[in-house]
Image 1: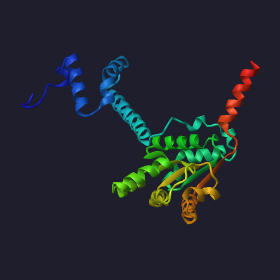
Image 2 (image 1 turned 135 degrees about the vertical axis):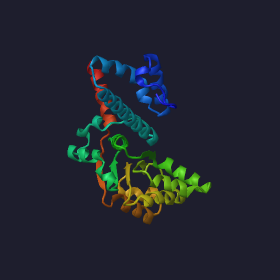
Image 3 (image 1 turned 180 degrees about the vertical axis):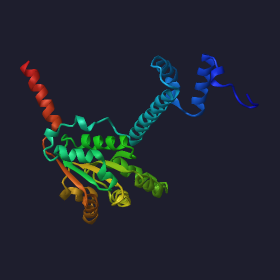
Image 4 (image 1 turned 120 degrees about the vertical axis):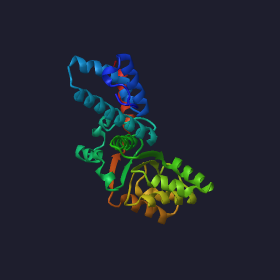
Length: 267
């Protein structure tokens, strides 16, 4: 053994080898491997795997763990108010959304193309479920996503403008792969707030997708954005090359509640 070299692996006792693996995992930030290296080594010995096969198992496990942590981190950073999955969506309640369309949207190809998505329908018809579900799918596929209500976003923008940090915040939202904007039309915006929101929409126009949900038809958006010309410009940017889905008028939540009450009465 030459000077400066450590002992070969054959000269390490089992406890020393375990300690060396733990130290190396800490140095290399292999958090997943550190937790399972010992048990995987024991299993590899039972199966009489070659050293190369064991190394492949360990590295594959670490890659999968990193992917899982990255997905969890992106979902957390998106700030969804609750977890909603596309597979839990009752498509029978949304006749304007055939399975083929949902399958296409779930791939995220429209996000890569920078196309907008608008969900229109009454309260309780599945708009937010669909919005969050598509956002979560996009985040799990590796895209940067942020969910926020229209009122909350406008408040952020107004505060940033007051603190002379507007350009930084607009740039932050412009870099997202998908912005999920909920509750468009729920709150009437003043002129300043509407103009600030328009900056976000313009910054993402034809480059990065916005998916928004509204309980108001386009004809009523002028009441939200106060200025008819501004409302028309917003609608134009959110519909050009976009996907428009009507989730209907009958509240799914109300229908579910009524069915539950009827069943309890029958029992």
